[in-house]
Image (tube, rainbow, N blue to C red; front, side):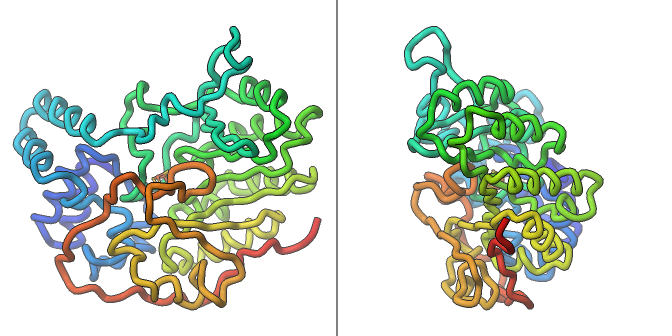
Length: 363
Ligand code: SF4
C-alpha cells in the first residue's frame, strides 16, 4: 500500500486526521509503502504513532523542513503545482548524497573505450555492489532510507545495472573482488528466475575469486512469505542452496532494526528456511530515534545484538555505511525519523524467542 491509501490507512487505524494529513504531505515527497505483513503483524496500531515499528515505516511531519512541508501542503489541490513543489523539495534534500550517481562507478577498461559499468559500485577493493535492474524497489520503505531517490520513478536518479553480462565481464578482470553484494532496493523483490542468471554467471569458471555472495534484503522483516509460502519461495531457497553447494559463502544481510521484526511466526519460519540452505544471516542497522535509540532495545533477549543472540548486529548512527557493504540500510546523511512523540510510548516489547542466525551446518 502506498500514496494516498497510506494516509487513508493511518486515518482509519489511528482515528487521527492530523496524523493522516502529515502522512499525505510527507508521502508526496518521500516514497513510502507498506506490505500487508507490516500492517497486520508488525505495527502496534494502539501505540501508533509512537510505536517503534510505525516510526520505522511511516512518514512523519518532521522528516522534512517546516517550510518544505508548508510548500507541499499548499500545493495539494493542484496537480501541476504539487509536482513542481515536490520536485523543488526533493532537489533540496540532496538525493543520492556523497555523489553516489557518479562516484565509485567502475569502467570496463579503466579509462578506455569500455565505458561505465552501470549499476555497479566498486568502492572497497574486495567488494562490488550490484544493483539488479528488477530489484530496485522494496517490500516496504524504511523512514531512514538514504536510497529513497531510487524509488521516486526518476530514471536520472536510479542506479540499476544492464544485466549480468556486463557485471561479470567487469568482475572477471578484477581478481581482488571476493564479495559480490546484491543490493538496491531489495533484490528479493525480484522473481528467482530473474535473479538466477546473476548467480549462475558468478559460478562460472573464471570467477572463482568471488568467494562470497551477499544479498541485502528486508524480506525477512517485511514480507517473510517470500521465503516460506510464496510460490517463488522454494525456487529461491533452492538457488541459495545451490550457491552454498558450489562452495561459495552466502550471507543474507537481513538488517533488523528492532527485535519485534523477528517475532511473527512466519518470520521464524523464514529464518529457519534460510538457515536450512546453509546461508548465514547477518544484520546491522542504524540507530534511529524513536525506533531503537534506547540501549534496552539492543539488550532485549533475542535482539540481533543481545548477549543471548548468536550473531552480532552493527549499529551505525553516523553517515557511514550501515547496510552491509551495500546499500540502503545505512544511516542517512540526515536523520529522517526525528521529532517529538505525540503519544506515550508503550516501550520496546521483548521478542518471545531467541532466533539464532548462525550458519547451521557445514557444507
Ligand atoms: S533501508 Fe533498505 S529495505 Fe529499507 S527502504 Fe531503503 S533499501 Fe529498502
